[in-house]
Amino acid sequence: MSRVYNFSAGPSCLPEEVLKECAAEMLDYNGTGQSVMEMSHRSKAYKPIIEHAESQVRALMRVPQNYKVLFLQGGGSTQFAMVAQNLGIHTGKAAYINTGVWAKKAVSEAKHLGVQVEVVASSEDKNFSYIPHVQNIAGDYDYAYICFNNTIMGTHYEYIPETGSIPLVADISSCVLSEELDVSKFGLLFAGAQKNLAPAGVTLVIIREDLLTDSPRAGTPTMSTYKIHAENESMYNTPPCYTIYVLGKVLDWIEKNGGVAGIHERNVQKAALLYDYLDASDYYHATAQVGSRSLMNVPFLTKETDPEKAKAINDKFVKEAAGAGLVNLAGHRLVGGMRASIYNAMPIEGVKALIAFMEQFAKQNA
Ligand SMILES: *Cc1c(COP(=O)(O)O)cnc(C)c1O
View: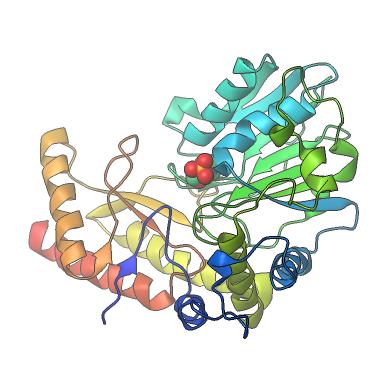
């Protein structure tokens, strides 16, 4: 069996040990004679699985006692609506920082639901290649919203805006558990699983208890009400049982690898190898500006500026890389070029193999 290095932006690679454990337990989980896929979510066998996942999230992220940890469905995209529906309820106004595709989608969903959105800063002027610096957000906003790591643009906040008593909401879909984060600075954090946590299907939500309301915006479905999920311990309806089980194993793997601090150190090393190579290269360059660079998603271009020739060279790169066992390196159409997503589960050997390939490709094509 040969495995590739998978640089996909999501769904993305998972730790090999986790996959092996899942395989070993596939037909008979813990002497139950069943697969976790087949278990009732209300069974004695399943209960400890979801409780373990929650307690590992709490321990690894140091989640304060006054926050609920929820396992929901509908991906990050459903959170764009739920945040607006559950938090945009007093003045009906919210502040958003526009840092690209995922932030824009959150803005348009909030507007669609009747929230009065003020975009207080944007990096659209430079194709979202940087994070605007907004030290303070003040005003009669129900909440302030940021996308902490911009998967497509490869940018990441190196600071947390001060919002005083305004709850700060952050989309951490593509950077959750990649670095230490002070949960107490946020009112709500959410992350779809398929980048850094588990296979697609579960969305992690961490919400401060005072933001759980019985009166979300008019017309909000029961299933979109955080309080309902909190009161039912993420079992108001059938949760994505198997995905939560895999999540628990990924969290154990993080714990074994030095916790979030250990994983962060590894991520810094991996990203530094790649950015240092890009910055020193006269053939490639990174598109994200220094001071705003993601540890997780690294878009880069070649020096070819003619659009047609650039497309041909990018296609060649992606094809030849795949031939060398380095897959899913195509860039997003909004940035062009290539993108290497190097999430927690990407080993440093994968990054070294990519750089060796890039070096050889540059020699042959420069
Ligand atoms: C992938 C992604 C999303 C969307 O997640 P879905 O689970 O596909 O809805 C939202 N925000 C960010 C930052 C992402 O990377």
